[in-house]
Image 1: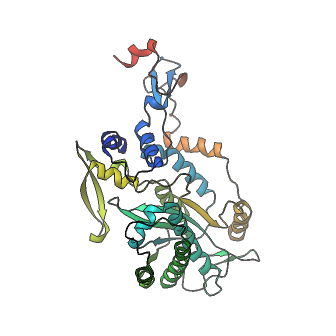
Image 2: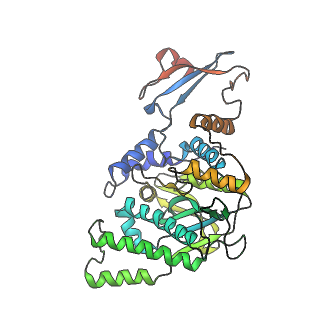
Image 3: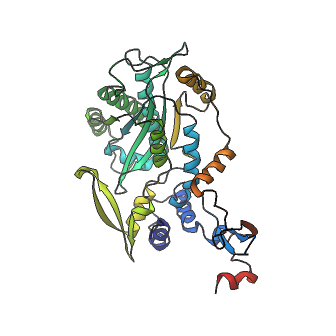
Length: 396
């Protein structure tokens, strides 16, 4: 069911009122793309039924990764690709979260801070996995970055999907050496390794003057050291959830997270003249469902906090799932577990299958007579209305 309100309506209504202070050119271009999505500004095409002659006009999508209406096909294609790489072992869900004291640095240095967060998470999993005490084998992880909380506040964290075990040098599969199938690595150890690596790299960047500092940052020696020691002494959030019920559940879960944006259209309850009202879960209150109303410009300001830098990869594969060695090493892992040959489909094959899953076999069927096929008869250029000889059909 199509939601009654969407982010595009909020962008069109409140975008002109949004203060430009703090907005980058990339933020503005993203908002412009969302506002123009599936309108004449991006062009489109006209389809006609080859049986009854029914006409249908379709405008192009903006294809921006922050637009909620443009993620369906890409998400399905990504899910198909992950299904081909599943191993017949339990998978664990690991979450790493940055302390809120680092939010100012994240806002001024998103590329560095989010990249370091992803690297620190993998460093933690790789270090514990390579240790003979816990695993002593080559492991892997699929890591997804999220920067938001349910109320659109800045809350940078990563979701890691980790297989139970790893590949040994002799080609055999090694299961975790301690505990049972419900155990990955000790949470206390993950917290320490994660915090130590992140703070070490952050300290080097700060001392070398590589980062833009937010207002009020304690750059003088005394306040800086107190700020640093407070972060070192803080208990950072890292935890492991129970294993998934099966490999297919992993893909279903990842597909929901992989292409998610800060807020979906279904959570927007109302867009008024001055405010936006949306639903959220208050995890501090037992995940109870609540509603929040924000001024329209404040809603867009919070949304812009989660627009990632250009070309920044928020989904990354590490270990034997890395693109540099995936085909070879993943095939070895599958052979060690189930003697299964690795067969990866091409992008065009995944696209065709994704369309079939999303729209079914009747995607090109005529919605009027339900017999003929819809065939493209004319292409519409950007920023132009349908041709004049078709106006009576569309503007009666």
